[in-house]
Amino acid sequence: GTFLGRSTSTSMEQGLDVSPPQSPPAYRRMTSREENVFSRLTSGTTQASEQQMGNGVISTYQGKMALRAPLVCTHVAEGHSRAVLAVAATDDLLFTASRDRTVKVWDLTEGKESQTLSGHPNNVVAVKYDLESRLLYSVSSAYVRVWDLRTSKCLRTLCSSGSSTNGVVSGQQIPTGEAQMNDIALNHSGNILYTAASDRVRVWDVRKFAVTGKLSGGHQAAVMCLAVGRLSAHEDIVVTGSKDHYIKVFEVAGEEGGSFSPRVNLEPPHYDGIQSLAIRGHELFSGSRDSIIKKWDLDKQELITSVSNAHKDWVCGLAYIPGQPLLLSVCRGGVLKLWSSESCQLLGEMKAHDSPVNAITTNSSHVFTAANDNTVRLWRLNNRLDMLVNVT
View 1: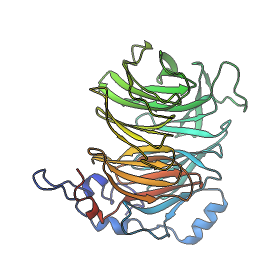
View 2 (view 1 turned 180 degrees about the horizontal axis):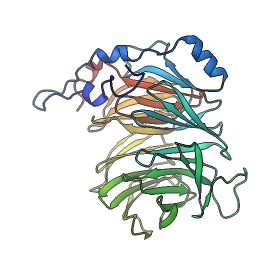
View 3 (view 1 turned 90 degrees about the horizontal axis):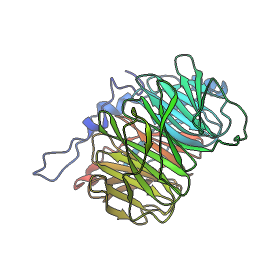
View 4 (view 1 turned 60 degrees about the horizontal axis):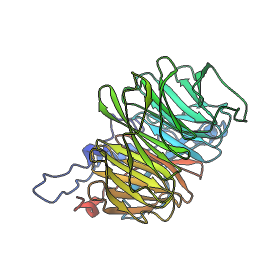
């Protein structure tokens, strides 16, 4: 079998079927097949020598786990020399962005790092990957670097000001006219990239590496996070979360270009800056430095639920579990929580890392958490999900 590949592991969707609505929803155990898939392919000796060569390794998690924990840690990806700030994943690949100024690409089938993309001017704060074009986007300083994974080369550098240039821009100081970039998001087609720098969001056509528009009339402070959903084949719904405590919603026909004004400013705002957003259909969750998680209905443009003290610290990351009415949140205190995305009821919580967790993402079989301890941990849903019997 493969290490973490799709071929032998069951997905989170298959493993957790909700029973018919007339009976209380019960979660089935993941198949036992899942248990024996996750064994290391290589012996400990190779791991040690690879680690010395500076190649990261994904190794089986050895620590203890609480019986009632909502997720079970299966593996740890180690190789970065400083905090991991952002993470992205497909079913076969993991991408990690770090304060060590690199992005690492990990092969989930082999269980090891396949390449390191280095030479960023500063901390790498965001990373996104488009499966179809096989282009990777990494954010550092005022720039997005566009990488071709087939050659490990930087094809283009996109600047916060809207210009773009071939190859690499170096220099640690942010030049006049440029601003720190905080987040990026790709739309469903992978043709449009949204970049947030300072209080502005630009719209790029990545086939031309050119700016086609901007989101204007926006924020009083830096945009910290972006989320993009799909309104129609040619229209995106773009959500911006800012340090000014506000969330704005834009409808963008990215191909057409131009300047887009917010369709709505979501009220009431958070009490502090927005750190994280998660969108699914017309449902939006926001996480803030105020320790609150809010659920919004984008159709009705209104607040559904506000969960006060959702965490004891900044809510740094939010992610849906694919195919399930489940939401994960992580915070600066290292805690991970599992929620019903329907009722916003807390279903479980655990200490995920002994350091701040900066980001969380999922693929069809695993959850990935990136933390200040220089690692990314790989998780799957706990088989003992009898605690979730009344999930909705």
